[in-house]
Length: 182
Image (cartoon, rainbow, N blue to C red; front, side):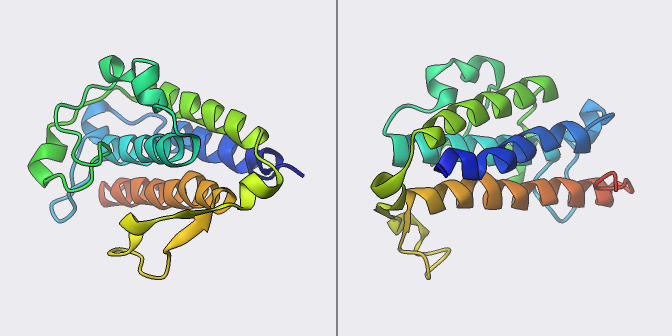
């Protein structure tokens, strides 16, 4: 089984799921910041897919991100994206200035999924298990100094994304709404 076959259902689900959990939310709800939490739903989604895109393309594929190569900066303008350019280290006020359209963000998530799926479909054998150093993780996750390409795909495209989609549900809960429609 290829890495692409192994990841396919998860990539499809975690890139589709925001459509379900954000259905019916207004622009104000999508950009609301809880008093004691800096992130609003749109920032959280933008961060999840932008970091996935930048890390997979830059670290694994060695090519510009979908965001850069396909002109997403015009549709998803973020004046201060932080460094790295997916929102790390932004203040509550900087996050509050980010206003994006949900449909554009959902289209971007799908474009990222397609690009990553294409890469994963061609990843087999030795290339999939090749260890990549992750020195930038040492401060946050000291037990992870390197990971295989396959593990990096799973971590960023499934684990990290799922973590932030849980955060979206948390923010909905803080608004008195049901997180997931279960």
